[in-house]
Amino acid sequence: MTKVLISGAGIAGPAVAYWLRRYGLEPTVVEVAPGPRPGGQTIDIRGVARDVVDRMGLMPAIRDVQMHEKGLEYVRANRRRAVAMPAELLDGAGPVAEIEILRGDLSSILLDATTDVEYLYGDSITGLMQDDHGVRVTFREADERRFDLVIGADGVHSRTRSIAFGPESQYVHHLGGYASYFTIEAPEPLDGWMKIYTAPGGRWLGLRPRNEDHAQAFAAYQRVMQGYVEQRMELPPGGIEMAMPNSAAAIWARNTSTRLMTSRPFRGVLAKLAAAQPDAIDLPDYLTPSRG
Image 1 (tube, rainbow, N blue to C red):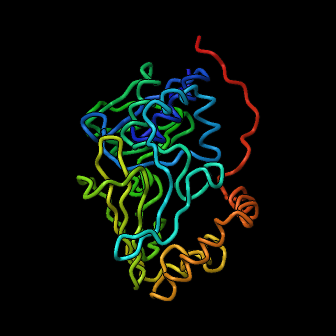
Image 2: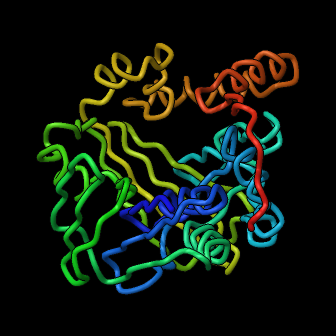
């Protein structure tokens, strides 16, 4: 049986382990944390991700614990609404997706779906030696083992990638943006809405509801993002300025244009633009074998 080692037991690791196991391979997941990590913020399930979880049969479990956000509100300094975008406006493809779930909840669902997969917690890869017969792997704690394939699913600062291909400085490119996410007690009732206040200088502060009457707060600061992102990611002209306006005039223009785009005469045009987003792709047809 083909043996595959996956580094990282967050979201991607268990997801790929699920499919490898379904197709008769023998996956092992190694995770540096001493056990499953329940923390994290909100994850959108949209586009091709919805197709994937449907094929995995996990949609009912996700629906049971999904967030129930009504949409996004831009608010003024006096906390009054400037403009709002309901979640259902673009059939769930807008800034607030129809299906949003806390990272910890999604991780738990994926772990429950991979109980027949071997997990090595509290350990990490220290060496990879490839030869004609596969990969010889050394670990910080476990004994050396041999695998046919090694997959790195351990995040932006992937240790697996660094071991295999060199320092992350060769692959990670800073975009000039800074963000901090944390959980706090809700300072006021949010009534199911994600609320964002934008200040001049590309700074913004947001609150979004949680199922336990808490709110997630996040702050972001923009420095040199526009040129790099528009060139490398081919964003529409003005895309970054729309999300993180630098001046009071730009904030007013963003709110006004958003209000205009979400009005009834323009909703059809906006829906077509949203449908063309990069993750709205068709997965190739493939069989979903039952477990033997």
